Image 1 (cartoon, rainbow, N blue to C red):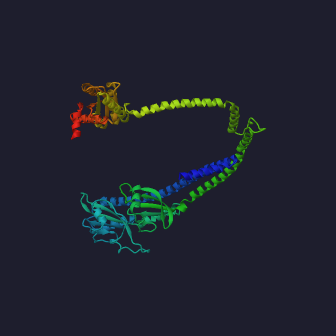
Image 2: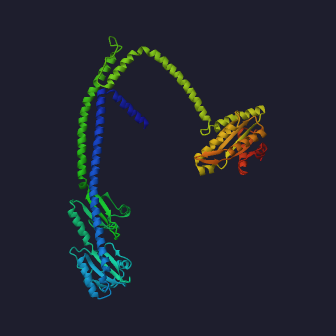
Image 3: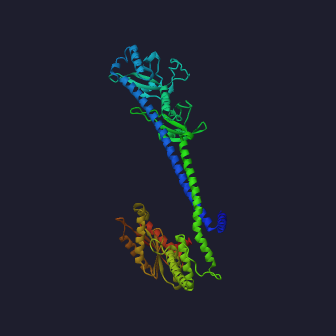
Length: 581
């Protein structure tokens, strides 16, 4: 892939070499103009489209919200009417009195409001009185509205009439009756439950509401629908079919309101929805009101506006292209003259100095620069010597930088002590020296006690401060001929040259006690620290420095296991016995 890109770039450069400056300037200005104007036009068109679409979506959302509110207020009003009627003081004597008088009162209520049927059933579910005498003497004990009405004021969702279907007059369009139930518990003055007052609202009132809004919203292309919380269309196109289900339905119920696009009958639709949440004491039935409009109609104005802006942008780009050609000729003219004259310099009977050119600040500056260059040709040798001097200085600087890098490579970045690699190199040389000249040496392995607890309790920054403090104490406690290194984490190694066992133990204890008496301060907190030390002396049986370090590490392990904050000397005899075993 990289080879193909490089090949394409080479061809482009070869093509550029055959184009004049005027052509390249014209092409560049034209391209920039087209890109800029095109971007601005496309951006403006997109913004215009989105703003217009948002305005239309807001109008549809407002219509859906208004219809949903009217539905909830209507249901809340009917619910309140039934509740107030059941609590009327004059009705107290009728609930258990003459059924005919009670029926008369119920029919008066029916004529005053929009109920298709109102009836009162006793606590056993027997209808005592009802409008038109329908279902009077029948049992409604199994009906959901009666069961719910025994406990509270209940509003049921839309359903087809079952018991009333055979008693009501058949509609002209043969559509079945569909009701919304309202049930209210009836109690006497002492609070005793007497029965349930039930009312059935004819669902046709919702259809009438939708038709009224569609006819008066000023937008004949918008279609309104009422959908149950189960996704079934109650009013609107494709009535009594499931319109939304699964995740789509769950998302609508969760959002409460919004807009989206959907495809219906092969047509792209812009749809706004609002989920009814009730009104005052009425909790609502989560009816979903949708307002839909064909996207081609709803967004027609937005598309037209975007097309107009793009057309203006295209015309502007053409004008910019024409201006680019004229401007390129003007800009390239002095450069072409400049190039032709420069080509004659140094030739027989040619000029020795470039003529001054004008036309732009860059051309004037280039003219001055080249004229100055011709005057400076005689100083080329002196500049060459200066360049050689600078090269020598750079070489010295490079050597100094290499020394610094080597120091960084041999040093632990946090403590400034030697790192593992540089320490092992020095230690190997020391072991070889001790073996050759029969000298003594010792190795200390130092580890901070309970270091993980410091990190967990006070944070890693406090742990870093502890490591730095221990490194400082170790560096101050040893001789210049001794070497100290951080092997990693909270572990340190010290190489002691020309030292006997007694002195090595004293020095190790001095380091340990110095650390014990020191304190680490971190963010106004004083953190006590201790270390455990493993000590090993050089023995003729040691194969290399790793044997001594390993023995010191074993001593450190014993120091840790026997209480910490102590020094333990690991004799060479124990290690030889372990090897023999």
